[in-house]
Length: 175
Length: 421
Image (tube, rainbow over all chains, first blue to last red; front, side, top):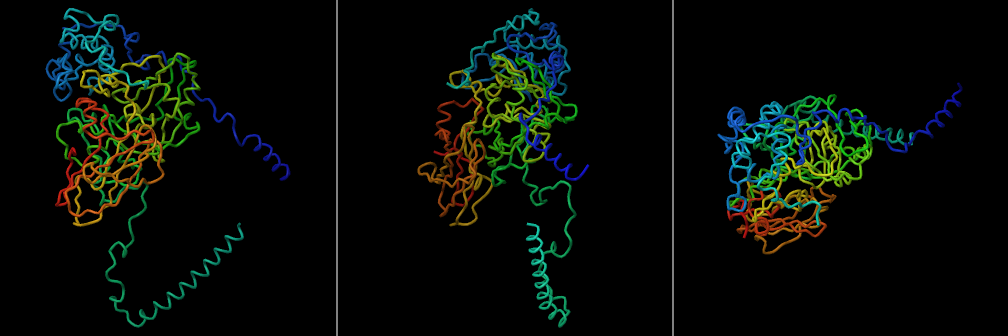
């Protein structure tokens, strides 16, 4: 090839490829399969639809709490190096409000979601679904939100109405 | 062009030779006349009389600046749960160095192998998609300078007594950086958003698997999937290999170590949008989804921990102002606890939802003084007094404290934190 030919070829090619429209390729990989897997379905919404199978009782939760939670949250969850989890229901309008799970959290599904993903803090994701149901049952029973003979599972957990369910004012969207 | 530069290089060489000859001549006379060592400068510092240190692969601050650090406040029983504060009182300009950007971690800094990290976009989309880091690097990127402020910044202000901590160690859960990454709109549009979508649940790949709901509207507006921080790849403690940056919105939403964006019609009601990052009001109700960091300012110098050495003396009042709603329009300074105000000079460029540095020279005559700064943003919002903020929100909200900060100057030139008048 002559140099002149090479140069003109280069010019031709570059005029067709120098600037792209659209600006980029779609490089995401189809991920329906991934999206179904449990490790990508950790969030439990108030409707409880992604709660796993399993069940737990207050008695099982009490034992487990002493073993795995009390070191930080204090005996029966009254608080220690970590925040209190129970009690103080009705304290939010007092001069010394305490925001515990039972006094402040609007949804019980959040309790399951949070324990499973983040607790115990030195070993997240180490608890079974049954254990998370048990711990949730134990904490909620402490303030009579559920009675001590209730077995928590996918259906019963999602039905719980927390004391402070209507305690929040949505600041978004702004009016 | 080529000819000109050759010519000017020649001219430069000629000049320098000429110059050298002159210097050589003038120097050579005394050296020849007297070889006494004392004729050489004998008071040059040692670092001018021996070669300096070798090159470094990654530069570090001077050993003389070792006191300029993030101050760590963590739970001893769970040391990965806590914060570290940016030393705003030791810094100047507006950009926070990467090693000093504030931290809030819920369970430590994950050491993520970028090769194994994926971002999944799923939920109410036409096509769930996963992205690896190599693919993301090929997308068009933009840079955006903005602050990120923890919703819990300055929370000691709610206490009855003013905390005696240096400016950064009470108000430094805020930092300002240039973030570079992919507009999230590009990635969400590639997945195809369904018409019922309103929220996106973001999740991090840390040992708290932090999850939080973000309005889709914000992600389609100005949010970035950030990959770079002040020009270099994100630091591990700031989300390596990828994080959300939501200009002007509280830190918790700027999810670090981002692994998933699930598009939904309702928020998840996760722990960090119910139990935390909500503000309890005096009537027992709590504000939820209060995303925006309202306008705020802080005098960083002079401030607690410093003192005024000269009486009388002229001092440079300097500080930072920022607003999650836009640009800073005005910063006023008071030296008499808010009786009279004077406009400070705003240092450009004044950027949207970013730190703005303000300055004002101050003649101190040795009188008792209370220094305050008050920011106004471009929407007309004026930073409130502490009295007004507490009146409006009570004292148990914990989050979103943005009141005017008061530094008391005693007649001796000492500086204390006070709550003003």
